[in-house]
Length: 103
Image (cartoon, rainbow, N blue to C red; front, side, top):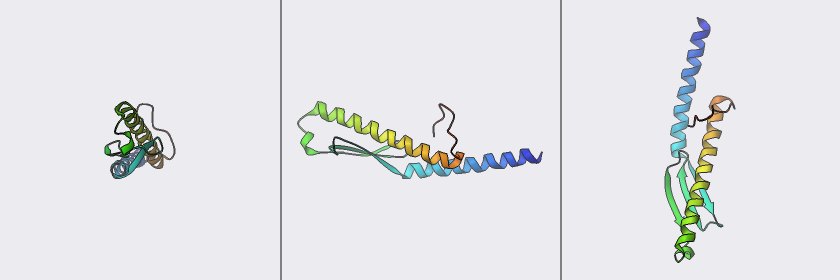
């Protein structure tokens, strides 16, 4: 029974740490930047877009601008996912999360 109590305490501690990391990720920012900074997307570690910067030289070519925005969004999201994974490893002791379980 003592082992069960210890296991429950560990699970509760891990849950508290995960809540702390979720809050931390909401306040952290990542950047996705393409074409030497012509388009830059800033988002939180949770993937919420906060800002998009577009160089004025792109105002005449909408198709290129659209493609660059999408690319910058993908880059920022990749960086947010990487940040999240890195933070979660601090809770899980480096063990990867089960497939399909994202934080």
